[in-house]
Image 1 (cartoon, rainbow, N blue to C red):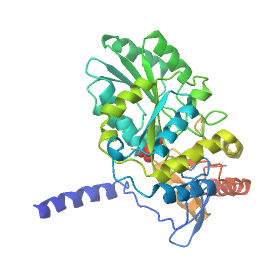
Image 2: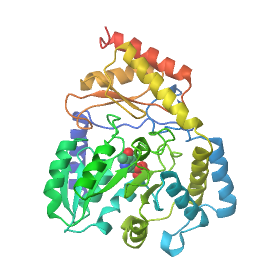
Image 3: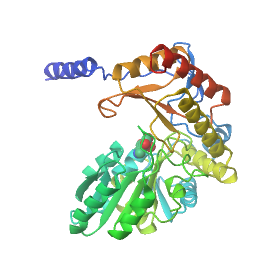
Image 4: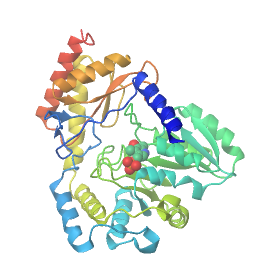
Length: 396
Ligand SMILES: *Cc1c(COP(=O)(O)O)cnc(C)c1O
């Protein structure tokens, strides 16, 4: 059998290559950070990680993780409800709830699992999920696993959301689902207006704060802080794999009865291993740091403002953003790849995205800012963008 199947796989892989969509992985031999070293020996400035607060290699988080190895060991060898819950897991859940001003939190191995396991236990065929068209793949997959009726609205389009909510009046319970920050443009969901519509049409709201937690809002509490809606959203999901230390782990935080039922019925929680204690220990330290001081959040906001205003002054065409994501629009797929390759030669590591990751004719380079960047890093990136922009005729 496998000989035939191998041919099938080879031809699929070739199709991917011929379409120019084959993903190659660059190999990093240093810790994750603003400056990284590749296995080619090349040292580059990193502008394409989700390391928004620069915590991936933070001394204090490493110390917390190391000391938990001595007092809590390495692995849990269990799911939470059998023998996979330590005091560290419970403390991190409590700390995340305090951070977002919610009632309780349930941890997962990843936010992909949090989103995969949130819908099916909570909603049934009598209910409705109204989902933004640009929501993350894990939300789309989670919705597929649930029997609720599905409605989709155009990205951040309030008029379309209202139309879908009217249609969804036929169902018993309604849940509007949106990413906080959309990762390709960096725009935020208009949560104030979504909240008004939820009240008008009797719906609940779920926000995935993966790209907004630690980033958006003066103290990094995400888009519920930005729109002054802390504690008013039923469900928030998020990741420990981006701003929050960047290791692994996800969570659902919100109303207590919701997390209570998820602990009983959510399949990725019931049937997949607990995060290791060292990740919980570092997570606790991370929330403490973000509560004790706002230094990292402030630095991220300063860095984002500095870079984005610098790029505008240079004359680049940027997508409107309220996050640490800056989409530099080039519109042409080939140009986006050439631009990114030339930037890498200048020591600036960014990725060019094109169809089908973004809509046809919307090719771009995505730059992600971090509190780990220093002014000299930002200036070097701006200079490189200017040089290559002129070289490739993007800038006059
Ligand atoms: C990254 C991301 C996820 C997945 O997070 P993991 O913890 O890496 O699984 C889920 N939702 C959104 C919106 C994301 O950006």
